[in-house]
Length: 279
Image (cartoon, rainbow, N blue to C red; front, side):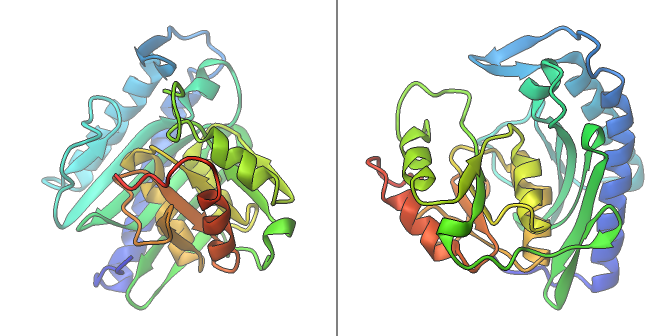
């Protein structure tokens, strides 16, 4: 992914801003956790609660005040197939892991990222129930990734058979290869372990801080991955499409790793019975 030419000072300011905005959004969401909020289905298995909407409203209001005129791509009401803005734009997921949130499971996060010409350059994530935050930026002259205020980096694992990985499954699991089942089995046979925790943003952030060695998934949305993807690049990791080609986060089929196991994971994902999805 090409790095933004924005100066380091501006990138650092954007990353800090993303974290602060995400923290304020998390304060709204946290009030609804385990509060038996009403649940609606946007589509089969794809949930939304009033706290997704209230948190997004808070995030959008703060961003409009601090960055007037800068476009925002947001989950609730957003068009997953819409064209990405050129130049600077924010990308917001008010609650990544809504199914977890709705059922009282603690793995969910508020994610605020920054795109420049469609590429991730900065982000902040807050996982209130895990007492964990991440923020950072990625630019032409390097970057910085932070977990709970301390610098972090990707792992040094070099062999897939020693790797701890993560993946996920889309709401519509009615047919392959989009269901990701075959890839899961193929990779599970090779890796030390594969986790499925239900929040793409946290999974990718765990690659950035070295908890996971890699992650892959199909059919993500741009708001799921923007903030955490910027952190992975800042922490020294690598992101590609499933076939190892250039990543397009808006297409949602990605492999994210520490870099050292990347080609091995791409090959393992490609070994499943279903074709690599490029669209």
